[in-house]
Image (cartoon, rainbow, N blue to C red):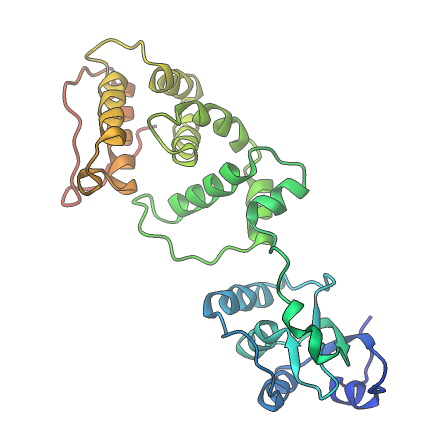
Amino acid sequence: MATKMTTAKFMKKADTKQILCGVRTITPKEARIILDGSTSKNRRIGRRHVKKLVHAIKKGQWRLNGETLVFDKNMNVIDGQHRLSACIYAKKSIITLVVVNIPLEVWLTHGEGKRRNHADALGAEGHQYTSTLAATLKLYVQYIKDPEWPRNSSIINNQDIMEMADTYPDIERSIRIGTKCHIVLPKAQAACMHYIFAQGDMESADEFFEFLAHGGADIDNPVHVLREKLLRNRTDGKKSTRWDDKTSRAIVIKAWNAYQSGKKVKVLAWTPKSKFPRVKR
């Protein structure tokens, strides 16, 4: 537990010959003083990383997780400038481990470890297909916010992705089905589309994606037309003529809507100037 001793007093108390470690509460004011007074050559501040940390602090997701603020014997910051910057921008205090009196010669060894990404976090909780699961969850939450799937700019951290996995546990079933369609669609995209369609009619969604993965539908069946178009699109040698993700999603939705309505089609098309289709339930 953090004590009432300020970080400044804690660091002043440190014997310059010994490494000292303790849990401290860092206020935004202290974070500013520390950064302004530091002369060490840290990496350039990554704005996106700071935004992620600010997001976590403001949402109450900040945890004492063993990561440390590290200082040399002159109280220059060796590691932790992003966390200190986030503390300032969030305008909230943080509790963290503080280590002082690390020799300058070890400075270059900091930051060499691999960061835990969304897939790592999901794997630590026992989830399967973790990379695809993380991508699928992000796509689905994006769809909930706006069914037209604009370009995503949301900040999502590991705790967010774990909360999503807990909220939508049955999405892993869709991932197992969507993965089979990797020849025609990216795994996460197929899994997300299946999950959306299955909410209205799971049996039909399963059948639709079975045809999409393996073929076998009648020639005028919408899913057959879709599969042929997707195969041509993915094997087209010209990148400039390939569909972007939004176009692919729109055409998949149009095929699904026709499939659900029992319509026979010969052509499936959509352009960015057209209204984005809504999923029929």
